[in-house]
Amino acid sequence: MLPKLVHLTLCRSIQLLALLGRGDAAKDLEILVLRHQLAVLRRQLPRPRPEPAGRALLAAISRVLPLFDEPLDAILAVNSVGFWSEPAQRLVELRALLRPGGRIAIATQPRCPGATKETSAQAARQIENLLHKAGFSQTRVETLDLKPPVVCVLANCR
Image 1 (cartoon, rainbow, N blue to C red):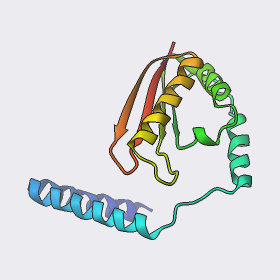
Image 2: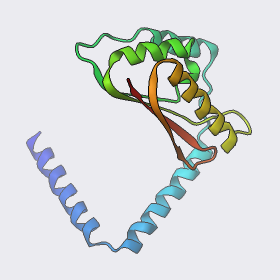
Image 3: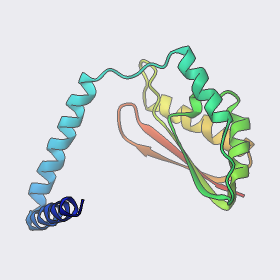
Image 4: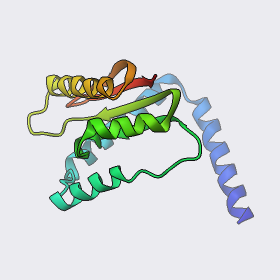
């Protein structure tokens, strides 16, 4: 175990030194290549389409949240609100788990056929409305400009 740890530490240290020695142009090129590789992979791998039974399982799991000894500082939900039955009620339950001043972030990327910037903006507005109804305040929307855009709605627990 110890030789593996030493080897890994040495390899990472050398990689870090090599990275520090690179210029900005080399780093930009590497980022460009990685983005291209990611785009190629996204085209090759089909998106999972949950079956009705899988959706029901996700909805059931979202209802049975574990109990925590301490209030949470933050909650993150990514591409899951659409699977919740009664999302407004789930958000009320999540708010009860947060400490006062705690934050929630709900991110989504509409995957329906023909999704556009407007589809993402509409999803963000719906999530904002749900958060306000559940008692959250100070909402704001951040957008990641992908196709279609990813929207992340952030809010504070009162």
